[in-house]
Length: 411
Image (tube, rainbow, N blue to C red; front, side, top):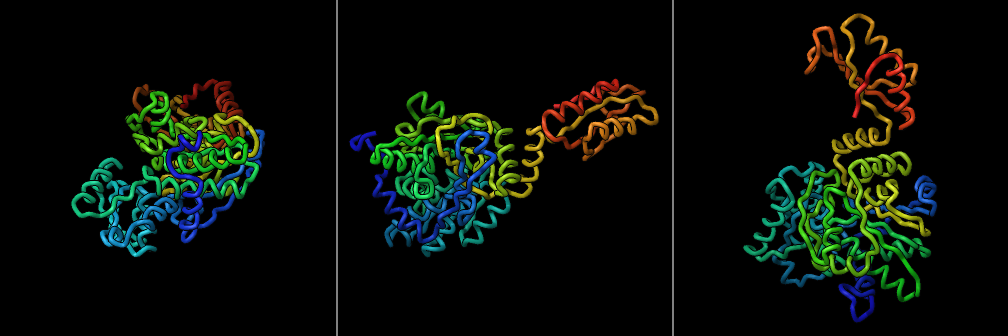
């Protein structure tokens, strides 16, 4: 990347944005992780944007964009569409700048995100079941009312605001070798990658930038392979904060020129990452914010020196957290649900309990029924959920039951 071919903000733009963003955003902590360091074989540090005001980095780009509006534009108000983090960022920035904000959100938005957006003073309109419908509604509202549409990622001011994360990372980890960044539409990674690559080139050094997408919402890999922005169908994903069907146009150009690699992670990878962050780092992170750590756990990142994983947000619905923790325990081999067909005679349930106790498996839940599909008259179905200590212990539990003549079935 040469100065002549530079796309998007310059270093001076990012530094100017830092002065603006610093009025509202905090310099978030950089926490080291011994567990991830041992796993990767290089120092791993966590950039905790989950501890940012409003719970994510989004406040940076929103405030930077809105602070640069003219007085006349501010008087017209702003409008945005989001399922959560961008909504809260825009609502907070609007309150700080004295601007009227209207936010379109999907009908099924998590209650904590909806309430937080309203608490910041925004007028919230629920529309549709996916983020696509609120986006269309917001654009139509801007056209009809003259309100200024604040995009979540595809604008130079938003990119330079998000890129202030990169400046902080370099201040906190001067010998940075690799940074791992979650990707949705590309606002965060385009800002971080652009400023880090420009500064690395100026200093005659190398910094690797790796992007991470949820496998069920990965628009960047096919777009980069095709050399143009492509729209993809979005499959269900717990990482709803980065479930974006199409890269931003400006963001795509910057990512194409500055990002070294884009990898994907599965739902199980992400659930495991949330569990690791809770247990090992004592950090509450939303699924989209945990995909950088998921990439390390999944072996998608090679060790090259001090590595920073950006935790981009912490706004997780407690009900979703409950489900994700259960899923993460299962994906980590620490939670096992067995389906066992038993003869319908006294003592069988007690025998299974004895075998599980011998295998040191802790029983969490039991369902014993005579009404399962496909059961013989002389059979009962036992569904039992147990805690295990990992994949090896999980296999031991199954082996103990099979050695006793039972045929446990499990996913």
